[in-house]
Length: 420
Ligand SMILES: [Zn+2]
Image (cartoon, rainbow, N blue to C red):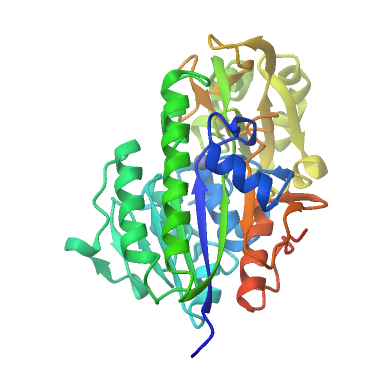
């Protein structure tokens, strides 16, 4: 009899900050963290937004290497800085048209194509789903369109026709447990749940809605664990369970572009020589070479604004792992110590540029705050001894760990394998 075949399953609970895991709220996750290898000092990437996180998990690289700089990011088109929403299903086409490619480094889907392949079920934004495998080396199932290797459209029962809510997460997990966990055809399978992130964008941290989303999410993880255990005789499965970022409370908002316009840069904004891309609780400011001096001269005044928590440029910005040809600065918004209505400490400013009306009192993320930068991560397999990883880890360490387990070379990544 052949030994069970090695494979990995990765579950991402979007927006589930490590601080929300407890025996009372999330008993399954609490036990995973207590009884298996956990990343005790685990960090989000910057900006701490879902689409960038998906690309960093997929490639094992920081955004300065993979090139997906934000949930919104600027491209230079006909000499103009144009800010795009990366969540749109069409953004990959735009990126290819303007830059000649999508991500600049290979994804796990590409590396795994000759080694069993990758299949992903995702219920977040189309952009975040498709950037797990932007060039269709594997299979991606998403409500906006499902695709097999080579970009073959999957329709009918093969498509993932679920709603973008908690019920959709429940139905997606049921299908994942029925269709993927017992199946033979993958090296890595990814289940990316929309919650609790989706709930938190419309409800406060600590609210009954948030706690309900946590409880349901915890149960969905338990379902996958049970399904994996039911097939333990056939497969040697590494189960990786984690999140991409946490959340912070929005109490105020600012339109950075409007502020720049009042400081004399309106013509530069209109002409596409400056662009502002909101990342929720932070902003990326893009500038053409000729306008950088004027913008640099404004930074001391910007730093005195109540919403400007910290402004990163040059080496300080690069140290976060984020660089870009026209990217000039990043602003992380101010954090105030006040609690929200459910007693959760800390509030932030939302950057409105391209984000629309802020949901004051609800959750958001994208910056360098203490809660949004603390996702969780655990590895469940006998090869990974229980306890805490003895170092700071990041989303970019997931890919090399998974590929190492599968015996596949993972050269050229920013991350390194995690062990006890
Ligand atoms: Zn997310």
